[in-house]
Image 1: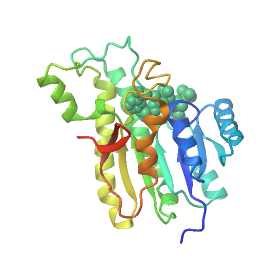
Image 2: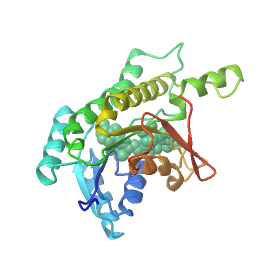
Image 3: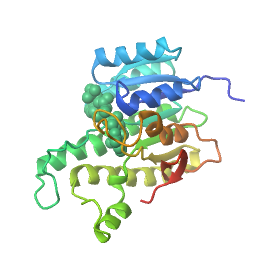
Image 4: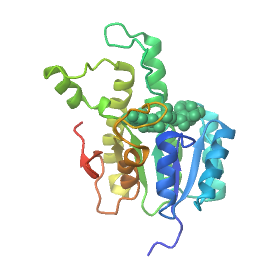
Length: 250
Ligand SMILES: NC(=O)c1ccc[n+]([C@@H]2O[C@H](COP(=O)([O-])OP(=O)(O)OC[C@H]3O[C@@H](n4cnc5c(N)ncnc54)[C@H](OP(=O)(O)O)[C@@H]3O)[C@@H](O)[C@H]2O)c1
């Protein structure tokens, strides 16, 4: 029987989906580490959750800064010595005004998205792996998107659906999906599960107020994956439809 309190780190948890994922995990009696690059915003988010009765602690973490990642690892190592759940949520999202279709995108645009949404995710995950290996049931959740699904993008192409124009964001999430699959394969012998979550278009600062899903709905696949039992899936991609968690195509 597990007696030790579970600990989850959610990156970019000061607002949006990251904050809601932390809230839903906190309601399951999991200690939540509120990763944020802005100390004031991160502290304020942690205090909001504490006021709701959640065991929340702010953790300074800029996922694009190797020193910040290393400092965060040292804090978690010193204070707790293990990490059960890592939710790689922090990311940059495209603005409506971005001109970033494949035929005109600049190298700088591609670089910015790949650095934050792929390279930084790999770096954070690798850095926390020694602490996840100290967990009895390590779970890694990568926040992806249907926009990163090659299958869904190609269906849009052949069915004349929404134009698959957002190559920097799409490529960064597709690369993250590949990281999910290959890391899952590598860590399967150790019992650590790695999956991708697609929240659907969600009402956050990035998704906008008219998005079809609330943050409560959008957070659910990630929360479900963070709490998988030992016989749960690994190396998979999940979203939600009509309140059910379902597989997403790669
Ligand atoms: N909303 C949607 O419709 C939707 C759909 C599909 C997938 N997703 C995915 O879901 C995740 C959350 O999306 P969201 O809508 O909640 O985004 P959001 O409202 O734009 O929030 C992004 C979060 O990431 C943080 N962040 C960005 N760069 C960071 C860095 N270098 N270091 C630390 N934190 C950083 C931001 O911190 P600051 O406050 O400091 O900027 C903020 O907390 C993302 O991975 C996104 O790709 C969202």
